[in-house]
Image (cartoon, rainbow, N blue to C red; front, side):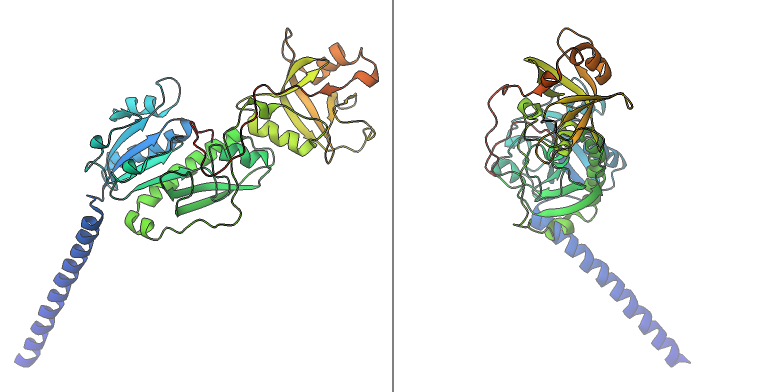
Length: 377
């Protein structure tokens, strides 16, 4: 009886020792990891770099987590945005976050933050800034890298008719954009009629959620980040208004419609009618078999049955319908009204849209070394 009691007591002592040792080892491991990177978290101290409405969703989610003091303990902001509209500065003011203007002095960063988060900031981050953060810096990018590196990934996703998009959380490297290791990725489908603005809202929400997910087991996620593939790299440089000009001779109907979906939140598509610039405010792709296929690109035809105005496209062909347009000195009108007021009186041979000249010089070809000055997502 006494022997059994001694064995039981001995077992309990050993069990308690193992529990104490296990906790000690775990605590020592965690402290060593923190000491190794010089950080104080979790919860983590974050400096957020961002500007536009795409940035705001990520900042909103970080701020929400900061209020709970679970995985985020501090969020301050660096921005170039002004206080008008939906942007990082206006949101940060509402939430009473500390705001710093770009460029920021390293003395304001040293020892005060664990990690930097960059979302739609549009500035190349110098190495001296990156080194201020013990865990480095991460970026929320609106594409599945390495596809669409650059300032306008969402525009190029729609412009090229991609059926899949997504968000990448990656490490920030100095001197070059969008080349860092991938921390996390999440994909989504793109609807055939989805616009860039609609995709932007979807990806901003997805990016915010994926960012918060990255902060769960942050050091582990950073440690196991993987390099980007060297295959299938594509670029999405900043676009300008020239992209909205339509060359009817070379552009098929799918490309015209994709261009409309990509740019409708920025600029209308531009064409000309007998030397006058015309803004195409709403364009639809149209599959039809009952229209004269001998028409040349740019020619207009009105279908009485559907009461729609169509334009013959070049390249692989097809037609787009013009739903709304604007001509200088006149109100916005439907395709039907434009046909009745401007097209019907012209001979059939003159019922044709032309292409206008470039508004400003075209941007140079994209490359990894390009410095972008603002984000177009």
